[in-house]
Length: 158
View 1 (cartoon, rainbow, N blue to C red):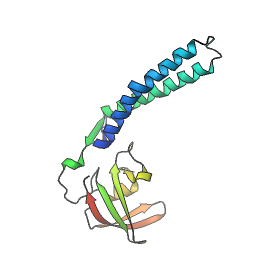
View 2: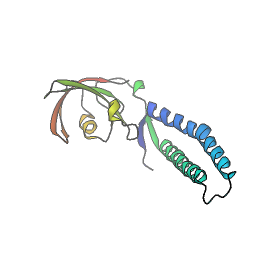
View 3: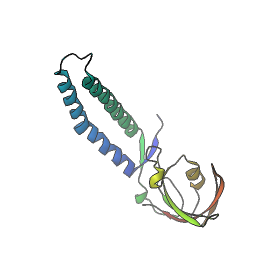
View 4: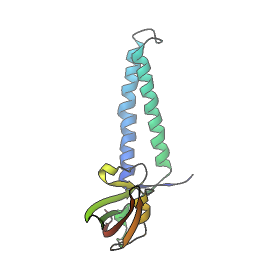
């Protein structure tokens, strides 16, 4: 089975979600199913069917998280010496040379990616263009809007 890179923070968030699903959500759903059964005929009991559907989603998510954690390669960049190179887990501040605007991204695993919070997937075009480069390098990255030229201002291992 192929290992999937994941930050220590991302793995911790998945463990917390798994714990919540198992200790809070699952018992709530079981209780809802028990209450719905008491209402009688299960064929026409919408509450029962809704609770069973919720149970299916919950169990599916539990299996999904357990599978991801079982193949996760957890990388904690805070324990690595910062040599100025862009690696998985690094926080990179870029200067767009076309617009003179700065943006900061953190390179994370596919499951952790959230562009609204500037968390980009290691498999995204920007991250693939940055990996292996160093602070003060100028890189050209192919984006949907065309080629964008960035200068790497700062590389942090947070």
